Length: 248
Image 1: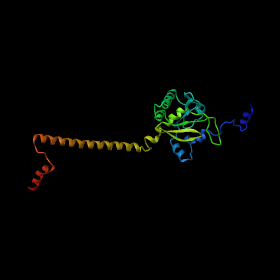
Image 2: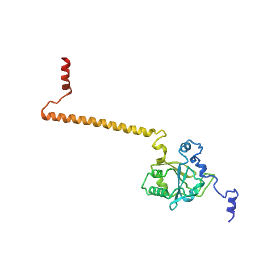
Image 3: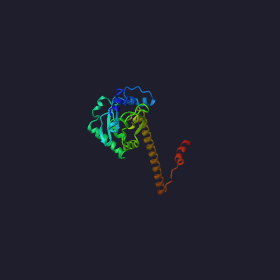
């Protein structure tokens, strides 16, 4: 019975995984130096205030968590990855209640805008681990800690959650509703263009309304002249007095 224990002590790590999410998701650190273009793109949006929602089976979460339902919990890391301070509950009770309700709504099919609901609490990314540590093919195996299938189905149905390439078996979602690039670029140009387009549309409707009103008045005038027996003026009739004066 002692042989497995003795075997695990030979490396001095007692079978503790050698690679954690801090390595695989280093681009989520505000001070990261990401290598790939994709990682650099998303790393630009990570600041000390960036919030990441870890969601899944409690044993697979690398921080203190709040229970949502049996086999499902969540925790929030500020500034990207969990730190030593993550041993304490990551949000206040009121915020925790809001997040729990949002996740349950998604699981029940009551919303396809989970990202918008989570954005109210500043959630930028979602991570769903599938094991107690990252799974690295041929290098590191970890005990499975799968998230409930109802949660995975709900996340796949959301319009404002964009799934990124997985890391070590963990599912990663970008909350596009909280993305700073959705509302406007740093210069705010899309908002200006949108406003300009709205003004042009209003101007076109005003012109069309004035033309329509003018045509309506013209038809009403012609009908009144026909009823009273008066001749209907034509463009040539209107010009005859002017031409007579010029000829004189």
